[in-house]
Amino acid sequence: MNSLISLRHLHADADTIALIHGIGGLTKLQDLHEFRVKTEDGYRITELRDMRYIEGSLCISDLQKVANRAEATQANLSRKDGITCLHLKWDRNQSLKGKYNHFGKELSQYDIGQKEPLHVILLQKNDMPSDISGSIVNPSTLDPPINILQCLVPPRNLQKLKIFGYPGYSFPDWVQGLRYIQVIEISHCIELQVLPPMGQLEHLRKLKSYELPSIKDVSSDVYGTSNMVFRSLEELSFGSMVKWENWADAENREFFPNLQKLHINRCYNLRELPFMALGVGIKELSLSGCGSYCGTVSSYLHRLTCLTHLKVNDCSKKLILPCQKLVSLEYLHLSNCKELCVEGGILCMNNLKALHISSCHIVGLSLEEHLTRLLSGWASMFGEEQALDLKSTILQLVKEAGMKSKEIHLPVSSTVGLSKKSGRKRRDGQHKPEHIHIMSSLTDLTMDNLSQSLNLDNILCKLSTLRSLCLHKIHNISVLQEQWLEQIKSLQELEFSNCYLLRKLP
Image 1 (cartoon, rainbow, N blue to C red):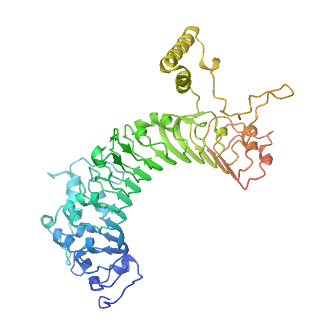
Image 2: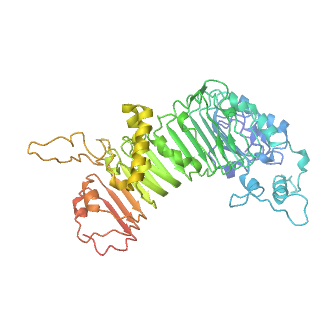
Image 3: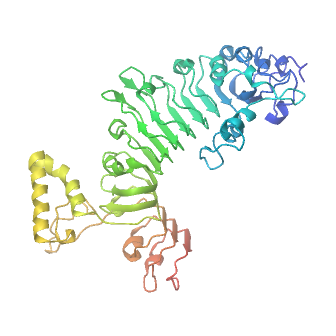
């Protein structure tokens, strides 16, 4: 195969390409989707030296088998100008067998009779490449991972960079010089302790970081020194960063001015998010495994009037959903929320298309929370000082009278659950609320494991566009006398599961 020196296109999978000895002889080859590094001659990373016509996407895997800087430098990645997407990949399994076990927990115990911690012994053993005969190569001949990565400088026109399983503690300086980079993905780097300075990459649109269990802080060093931070970033994702605690604010700088998608999943120890700096233009928000910061999510949602997609899973504190503020919301997914308060009622979200509620304990607002919610409106009418005085006076009166919050009628917005004309007097002298276009866009509805009783007559019969309905584990449902099902003319899919009080269908 290595004699086909004029070959430009080779259509084969990575397993087949890995069998070709001396593939570097195919100097005219334009597409090489994956190159697997081996320690034998004819399969080393130096085979890439003269393959300067490679274009598009290139993945270099098993980089733990690169012995030294000289080998990495001879790959000549910086001179392959046709490459727009580069994936640098180390063997993740070797790293996981070392410091972290299959459950993602650190191994701290010592092996019996050994002087080194168990994870150090395993990590050293797994990082030792073999030569042709299968003998273990002396680890002292291997350069540190950062020295290898330092020599794998990508071409200047690179648009997408993916780094998987990198075993180093930090990244080399060339990351901040990727002038045209648009996408960066960093994953499964279990020893990585600091993220590279990426805030000044002016064309960066998407940043994903996940499975980085040694990261404790996202410091201001990531942002750089300019007043504009992540100026073009549209999508930001963090996931499975189990030790992450602090996320530095950008202070007075313009922070994520174009951010539209924010995903934070399974970052259980994160204390606080810089919500005030994340902007109000976000359209898609996904939070899973919320840590201490989940208490401030509700106030942040009040500002997201452009939000179209919202997903919240495993929220350990009360989540207040300001339905009357989320006027643009189209997709709502809520599950495992310890306390969920639907402020204003879901029915007022007219643009909602898909609704999924699972294992959520639905509660109401306390008097204190009611007053706090109304405080912003009072402040605009009476001033902040008088609003605080008014709040304090009401709380004192309630305390002295011994009244419950449900006995107090607090002023609410005229737009909550009612149309603008709902308060007008009809000619016949009667008042009639006009619930026009209630959830008129909803097509998919899932309710799962809800203990609250549901009045389906008053809800489902109004959903004129509903196509898919799933009711699972709704303990208090009873449709013996209800006629809601036959009124949903648009329904195409219907699923009942574990509704124990359901005796028959209407």
